[in-house]
Image (tube, rainbow, N blue to C red; front, side, top):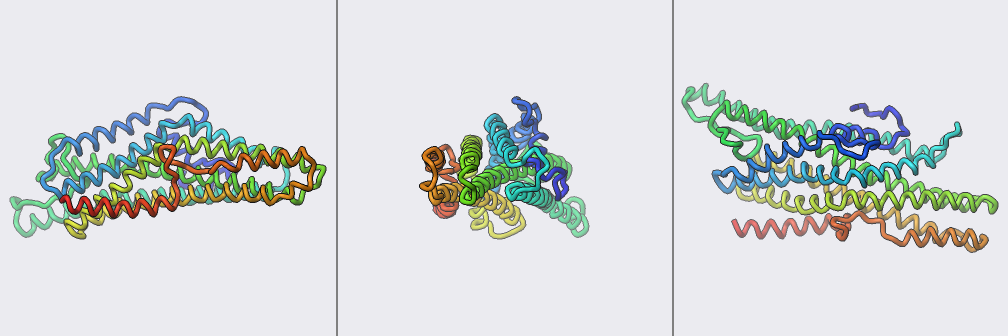
Length: 395
């Protein structure tokens, strides 16, 4: 599964589909399997209830605990919101496959530029997906393992210098208690809690990888489909008058499929983007607030790892959504520049149809009214600083 080169370079997002299949999503069936509910159970039982209902010893641990809860809520609940829209996403995959079937001819013909573009995209997506999975696994192990190593060093130091009765300083993997388990003063309790934390990190890594790679690769795929429509539009200028009608019908078909893909993508990601937007601001605020109050230490380093991960995720969404919108505008501009006045009225009507359909902005929105783009990312950074200043004054 973690090969850099895809088994079938013409397959549509096979890596993302394999990740989704692990949690019960299959393109050929309309129902989700039961694995997704165990994923949600881990979040509720191991994260939400302990962090909300357990007491915290001081304000520093409260900030860190809330920061972790917000981050894992984005990972677990964000992924669940995405999977909950599985019908829209399944329809989207079908539409993408229909587009690809038009591009890939059934006969044994030489590869066209459009085919080579899709194959190159598939190889690139697969390679980046594999590398990101390795990065995420490494980051998760560092976040989980660093407190364990520090606690182990504290245990050895206490026994060597002060004897077995000297108190040991424990560095928790996750801030908070766990159903009465003594993970702050007992070695055995800490070890048991570390196993629970490892399970939480394992599911979180899977959810984060699946959500991020699936969403970004799908947005990039939709942008590429629009680019291929633009290629077909450019080819119209070199098409004979006898064949222009047939080629225009193909352009209309591909353009309609691409627009349908973007519409389904927007329906799929609406709630995911809204949750990502809100929780991203809160994660930045609580992580930076912890550093301002406590200072920069090993725990703050783990918090920065969380913040960097969410920042890169949010920036990726905004960047690719901006690219999608820009590509749609380019296709519209290309149709305007097409020499339609030189052709017969039937051809002019088909060109007018494509131009009319191109007027709708191709935007991915949060809650159907907040466009996701790089301008929004800049506003989020500014608003995060404002919220941070307010929280600092309150504390």
